[in-house]
Image: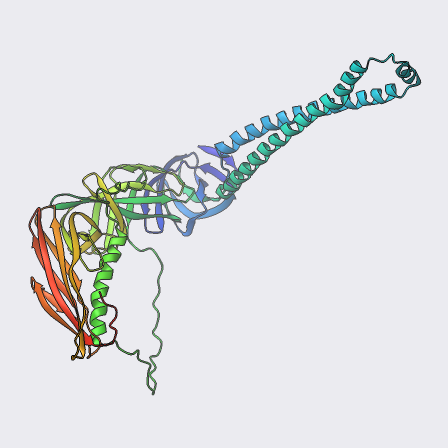
Length: 542
């Protein structure tokens, strides 16, 4: 197709046929055919390429009877069709302004009539003939009052009513104009400076040419997201990819490939000298061994609580289950995965269309069947709740960082953020309060302080029972509890009994790993005595 476009002689219909999206940009491939009707140097234009193009990345290859001499790029201000909302608002404003004009004309006519009647009234009521008839009692007072009300009251009421209508109408107009200004601002932002790629071709003879144009473009990216469905002995992990196109170029009916290859430019930096100095460096005072061990134990408890907050479990009976957040529409077409070390490439088998709206468009990349298990924890901070950790062992492919929604069957449990997961690595799919395992810790006995008449010591004794009730299948539960640990040589804590024996003991932190059969209860009981000097206070006591 030959067009008269100044320096441009031939415009090429060159649609996008392939898109490879990286983590922050994309490679675009366009292909088009054109008939060049004469030999010699001719210009072929590929119009309306986004200004977000990397101009250094443009490459053109072709097939035909001739050769490509050079490639240029020319900028221009793109033309975009106004938003439909703008057209609709303009139509509404036109009607509102017409209505306003009618009301203002009606108001002006009434005001003119009132002014004429007032003038006539003043002239009539001040004439000598009227005054004589008034003095002789020959004026009908009732008719005069009716005329006066018509001139002074009826017209004023009508004018006031018109003023109110005009005020409300102006408010509507102001509101529509504000909406129009917002849409015009969006439209101005979307009116992008575009480029035309100009290919200079030396044509040997009249023939058909086929050109392939490739370039890199910014403001397009993708990231993974996951749906994890817990089954009886495995977890189905569906990996989706969300692709965003903010390039102002629509990707219509094109093949889509997603890659984790890094396209950022880097450089080598020589190291700076490593200087050492004479003197005493500042060293933070180390924790005591006891405080360090307590810190490590409490850190473990905090990690469990943090995971519980990260993936809030579905409530059990007392509260309605959480509903999953809305997600983009996903087309279920699984991609072909090619993995080379840390690099992953997903290629969708079918052509797709992604408009340049900056919104996420989702596609199914891969589905994995992974090993899954549950781990249960209770600690002294949790009260009656048992934490259920969801543990999954990854397969042979690296899982990229991304948001994961977790389901059990059709029930939504919660959501969590997955880090990068290496092959065969075990990872947490989150934590929740177990709906099927309960714990209850009770103070069974507490004896008041006893002070002897002769002795110098006072004592307090405590007896606790922890009951774990399992409503599901056989489960291994890890229990952490604590008994006061004295920080003074004058205060002694003595364990009187503990059943069963803990697996680990560390500075007053006791750990049990107990196998609780299905639909049964398990008990942990212990008793201890605190002895301290008479007349002194010990804190904090249970």
